[in-house]
Length: 322
Image (cartoon, rainbow, N blue to C red):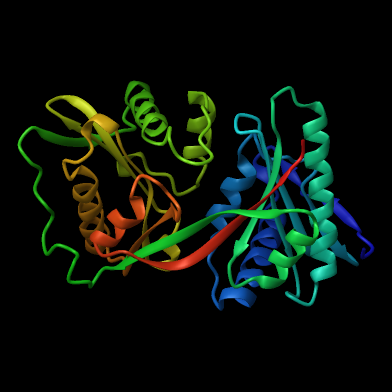
C-alpha cells in the first residue's frame, strides 16, 4: 500500500473553506474527465455533499503530495439504511491507483468502526463508479466489495420531437402547486416521497428534519420548482426539479413519485412532459434524471416511453461488514 499523508478538510462558521471546496471540486472534475471525457459534478454538488450533518468531517480527508491535495476521501454515514458511503478520488487518474486504493481502505476502516459501534442488524460500506472506470471497479473488488446495483442517468434533448410544443394541459380535477410553500406542504411532499419509494432498493425511513436538510442543501435550491400534484384535492404525486445541473444547460428532475393508489393514470408522464417544456422554455438544452436500472416498478420503461435514453451508467459496490 502506498504511503498516505492526509489532512482534514477545513470548515469555518460559514461552511467549508472556499479553497478546500475548490480543491475537492477540482479532484472530482478532473477524475471524471479522465474516465468519461467530460465533467459531470458541479461545485453545487460538492457544497451540498459537505454541508449536511451526515457528512463525516472527522474522517473525510485530502491525500497530500507536499502541501497539494491530490486525493480525496469523502465519508457520509446513513444510520437509517445502515450504510457508510465512500467517495474516493485521486490524480492523475488512473495513474494514481495505489493512492486511491489506500484511501478506499481507510474509508473501509471507518465503516468497520461504524459497524462495531452500531446497534442495527446490518451495516455496509458502499462506493460506486462509472462503468467505464474499470481501474477503480477492480480496486473495489480487490478490497472485498461486490457490485450490487446499476444506475442510469437518462436524458432527453429539448429539441426532441417527443417534447410537447406547448405545456401539456392538466386533466379535469388535477392541480399542481408549489410543494415547499410552508412546512405543511413540505411534510406532504416528504410523505409522498417516502410512500412512493417504499418498495425501492435502498429504502429507509428518514425523519422529516433530516430529509429536509438533505433536500434543501444545494445552493441552487428553489422551492418554486417543487411541484405537488393533487387529484380532486387529494395529494397524489410530486415532481421535484433542481437547478443542480444548470451550469451544463441541463434541467434535472430530482424526484418523481406517484402514490400507489394514483398510478396508472398517466400522472408521471404528465409531470415529466411538463418538466421537459418547463426546461426547454428556460433555455436548457436537455432534461435528465437518475434511476435505478433494475427498478421493479417499471420506471426505466416509463422514461423510455416519454423519450428519455441512458447517457451515463454508474455501478454501486458494497462490502457487507457483518
